[in-house]
Image (cartoon, helix red, strand yellow):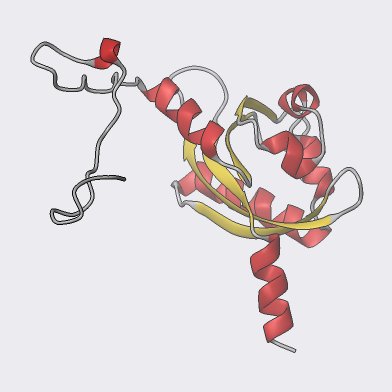
Length: 169
C-alpha cells in the first residue's frame, strides 16, 4: 500500500483485463452446478472429505457398500488408496473400532429407515496404524432407481479429541 501520507494508504484491486465486463466492472464468477459446487467444496477440505456411499445394508456386516463419490481428502486421512475405497467402502468400516462400527451401521440403517441425520464421532486406525478420530455427518437419500445412498462429510477431529482428553486429566 502506498499513497499520500496526508490522505492515508491507497488500496487497489488487480483484475485480469479479460475478466472485465463492458464499462470496466469485474465479471461475476461463473455459476456452478450442484456437482461442480460439491467438488469445489470437497476439494477445499484439508482435513476431511465429502462422500456419497451407496449399497444395501443387509445382514449384520454389509458387503456391497461402495463410495460412488469420494473427495480427495479421504486417501490422506484414511491412508487407503481412493480406488480401493471406491470399490469397497467396507475397508473404512474395518478401520473403525468395533463399537463405533456397530454404531455407524445402526445410524446408517436408522437414517435409511426414518431419514434421521447421521452425526457420529468415530475412532479409527489408519492403514499405517495411527489412531484418528472422525466426525461423520450424513443424510440418507433414496434415488429413483438403484440402491439407497448416504451423502455426507467426514472431518478429522483428532486434535480436538486429544485436547479434550488432555484437559480432562
